[in-house]
Length: 225
Image (cartoon, rainbow, N blue to C red; front, side, top):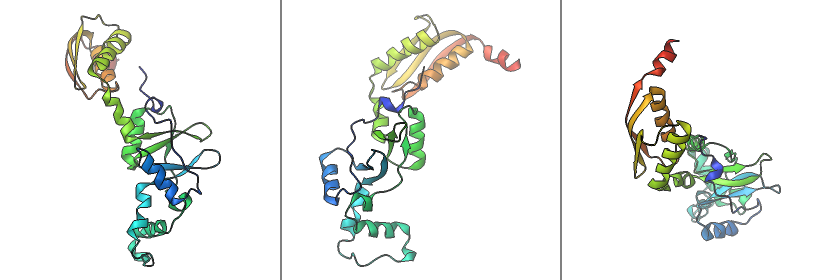
């Protein structure tokens, strides 16, 4: 079974702005949508930056003292916010560069990128670097919205049936709130291990509880050889 890819859950219709987009235009775009940031794209549709709500807040933060520029010892973050407070276009306000990925990247790899980098979203680009979608943390979590019946059907048909060629009566499958419980007996330990591994990798699975037994340990003989 192939692991799900970004293109199965990413947002395809992306609201973008140009580098010369005015401050108020950006605010209006954010207010009209259910997102917290807009990518900035060049003439070829390639993402060159992103403007988030956090990038716009300095305009209000420094409203009462825009002339009080932070000193060198204040650190990079305060100085950057001060510069953003004076920004009037997307080019002035955006954070760059952006983190990009491809439509065929595995969801597990994308989750790792988001966790390690701390960013809230990845911009999905095609082979020419043009923006084709956005993957947010919320998009990734959407896989857990799959119903228990749908998850069970995949375990029974895709894993136990097609991948392992097991008889339907060999393993009983129960799914409650995304937690899969497997009960039964298989001939080889390798079949047990594969059943657990493939089930854990299935979209929408929260956890796997195993009550499986096996007849003989074929993995031990493979290791000895």
